[in-house]
Length: 270
Ligand SMILES: C[S@@+](CC[C@H](N)C(=O)[O-])C[C@H]1O[C@@H](n2cnc3c(N)ncnc32)[C@H](O)[C@@H]1O
Image: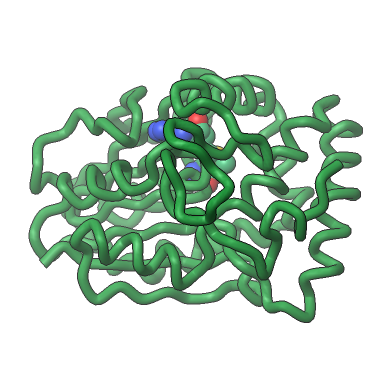
């Protein structure tokens, strides 16, 4: 298996968008899928394969892998969102609807939350959970790089652990900005670069324990190996901040959570 360092691990290079990169390792028309380089047009299909495979055990694995911490990271995201009753919120790559459910409690009956994702299997789990919670909300299967919403539609757009999987992160962020109302904010919750002294232990966890856990619980080591690799290939805190600024978001700031395992980025459309 590749080591994190070979692939630009915790302190390594941080490609920011799909397509020809700035790290000298990618070629025109190729992008990263974990540590592999694949033609751009193949990435979405491969990502779909991962989430088709993990959808059934997704929530259980989330709790096990993060030891429940993902709930705190998401709660912090909701708290930081400033979402109020009556607001319109878009959950992009919303999967099994953790954020959408929490936002819908915030906006109340006078507001509206949309749950969206590119993957039918993940959305089906999300819809089941909405029903289990007695919640009704609009759901759309769509690509974050081509959002089927009018410009200036939402007070808040949020994407949790989804951006990493997108082929053209810049296009997706630009789309999320487009659908925000002026004054609206984008929240990006995503794995990021851990505090350097903890990197060796985190690498051991990611590349040894995670695939083992994936094999035991979901009979799928490969998808969890992809998870670990895709985290290493995702832009670090400062690179993502710069990318958000490049697509026109303003007052971009980020919060490191759990020593930078995860970061919440927030930016405004002014
Ligand atoms: C790790 S899951 C996160 C789900 C949920 N947001 C959460 O925090 O639990 C990543 C999700 O991103 C979705 N995704 C990947 N590429 C996407 C794209 N281009 N557009 C929309 N969703 C995408 C996947 O289908 C998957 O449901």
